[in-house]
Length: 103
Image (cartoon, rainbow, N blue to C red; front, top):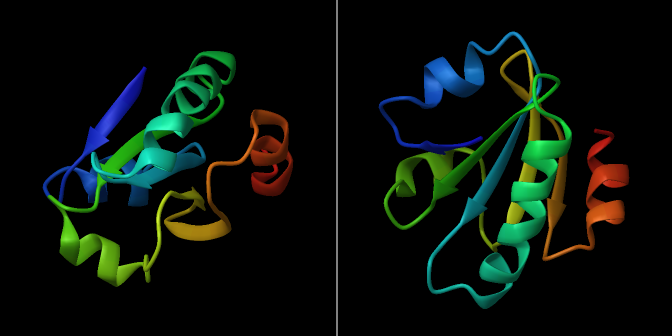
């Protein structure tokens, strides 16, 4: 299940998570983000219980996007222990996304 992040639940769902978290930084107007969405859902299903999968709409959460230096989208970031450990830019194929994020 994909969790939709806001500034209100980001700390609890991402920073305090005891398992790795994949955060998809996206926006509804971004065509590449829309193309990436089914892949993010597949990863959520494939890695259920091993990694938490979340989406953050940067239009609704601009402060968080700025805090993490998101200048282009889509960006997928893997957080571990509250810190970004890996990041990708663009709508990558599933295998490349998994490999680059070391899922």
